[in-house]
Image 1 (cartoon, rainbow, N blue to C red):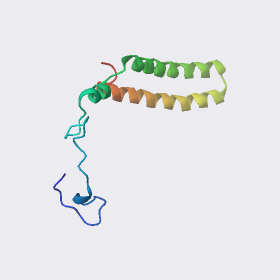
Image 2: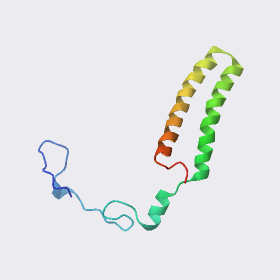
Image 3: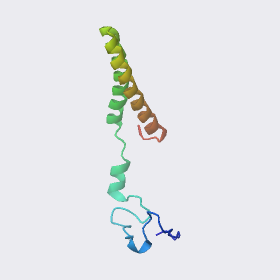
Image 4: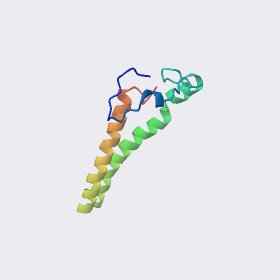
Amino acid sequence: MSTARIVEGTMYPPGETLTDTLPHGRIRADGRPTGELRGELYRIPDLANAVHVVGVWAQSVGVIALARWWGHPVGWVIAFAMCGRGMVRFAILMHEAAHRLLFS
């Protein structure tokens, strides 16, 4: 429990109302998991992540290819929106890779 002063009028609850939940079997006092839970949470699914990487690239290339094949202006508007979705998926993959969580 923090020893910080409680300021009246804030949303921070008084200390006596907070329960002490840690340690709790599978979680240590510092909040980190132990044993089997730790292994389960820290496992990196390489095959699933490889499928996601291939899927992002396939979507990005496929959307442009379909818009070119159709050749209709509506197709380009749809492709524009779908490219935004692809960029977000690339950003998610970059974030995971930056934390070294994409592949083990």
